Length: 354
Image 1: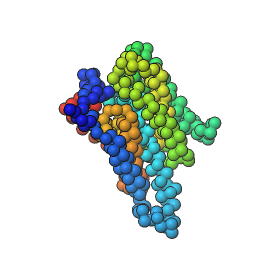
Image 2: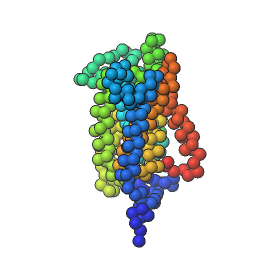
Image 3: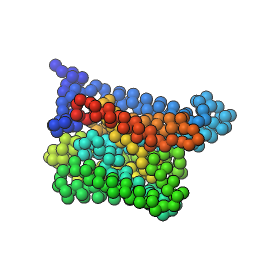
Image 4: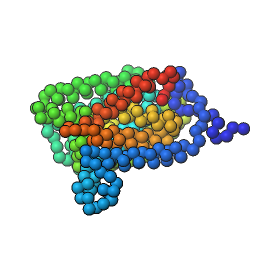
């Protein structure tokens, strides 16, 4: 008789040949998620102490240490919170797109969504638009518009070119990413030197310039987006095995796809507007989490949010700790680590999802 640890079940993630894989059911996924979450909280909290000014937990507890208290609560804590929220948002965006497209290389950046948001934000820098519209920063609105326009072009191109073949979205996204990158270069060329410097610094991905309400803006979209994706976890599991199969099981594929893409687009837009384009988090976090909790969408979303939050917070803490006169953009660190990660991934013998 088979117990819960040895009973085989169908894995929704396809194998290299395209068929669902059999794997041994992992016991106590909730326990693993709790451990991942606890470790993520420790890493995020510890990363807030890193920086050129050495701060300890004793300094924070000592309310007489006014300088350290001010540095921690006005600079370190909000910046670490923003890094954690942005990392979580990019990670769940990667999980969602990899399930929809059935491609382990899909992410908000490889799909061109972040490039569209970057173009919208770069236009805001060029035109000098600032302030608020309907209570939302204009920079964020333009980043939203760029991300959603990129999504629209990608989806329509894929539908026209390949009918119901959702995997073509990735190729359409690469084309859109190149077009938007060309647009950003044009904006940089047209801008004055001070604005060009701002755009170049922002394009590297940096948390050094903490905008007011940045943490609130990202959190206000991250929470409902994560709840919607968790609500849609069964549909995403079925879509990972094929759109036709999902439709035969009663999934409204068009509603699910558009709803998920809209969540990812809005999340990417607000993160890019506040942090710049930070690459590879949406690619690395899902792969690392999948190795720990398996391929099921619900635990994968929660676990990837923890892993992405801790990863970006630690990377940002390290940039503060090692920087000299000029602070190293966190996007440089994530790109280096991401490239090394995928070189290692390419050397794996099995051509499967990590």
